[in-house]
Every structure is written in C-alpha cells, then in structure tokens.
Image (cartoon, rainbow, N blue to C red; front, side, top):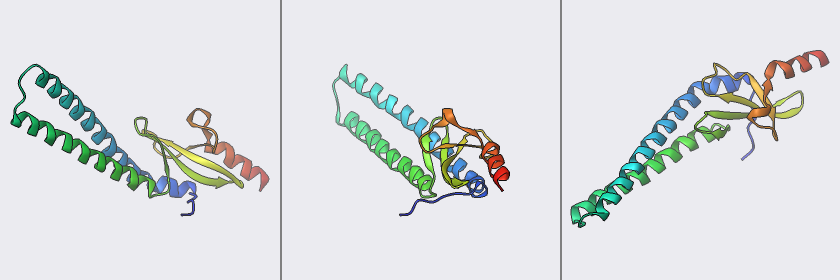
Amino acid sequence: MDKKYFTLEEANGLLPVIKRELAGLKRLKAQFSEHYDQIEQHKKTLLYRHKTKVDEDILFKKEARMEFMELEAQTFINNIMALGVEIKNVDEGLIDFPAVINGKKVLLCWKEGENEVAFYHSDLGGFSQREPIDNIMKEEEEKG
C-alpha cells in the first residue's frame, strides 16, 4: 500500500477520530492492567489454598477476557493506523502524520491535549526535535 501524505488541514480534520480511538485504547489499556493485577492476585491466593474446579474456571474466564481485551486493543490500533498515521506513544498520545512540505518529507506531529497539529519533525527526528509548523511555512513563503 502506498504511503499516505497529509496536508495540515487533513491532519487536523482527523483529530476527532484519532482522539476517540486513542481514548478508547487508553481506557482499555487501563482496564487490561487492572484485570492483569486481579489475575495475579487470584493466582497468589490459589497458592495458599486447595484449588477447586470453580477456582480454575474463574481463572480461565479472566484469562479469556484478557485475550479478548488484546483483540479489542488491536482493533483500536488498526483503526488509527488505517488512517495512514503513525502511533508513536499510546500513553503520551503521540501521533505523526507523514507529509511533504517544501519538497521535504516530514512528519506532522500531534500530542494528546494539543488543540491542533502545530509541529513537525524530520523522518529521523522525534518528538524532542519537533519544531513549530510556522517555521517551515515561513520558509515556503520566503521562497515563493
């Protein structure tokens, strides 16, 4: 599949969808972690008493639920990636949009909590090297 390149307007237009999918993914990740802790606690409890068929059934159901949660998480990730964007960090909500500005391939960079896509960085650079989009837009105006 060909790589999608976004304009700034297209990237900003996708933010509502990305925010929704990212919120669902983060919520599921928190539930997964909580569920995992419960399973581990249940296993520790079983070490100190005689296991019963009921205990094994409960543990099996909890582990099956975790497997389903993993599938749900993959669906959220696939929904985001199907848009053509790159998920850099789920916890921080870092998303990159491939773009071409002034003939340069760059990544438009958005972090959860920001109102709009307002930064970019090179393909090789990361979040710590991002710069305001205004900088590259000024370069384009000066050339034009």
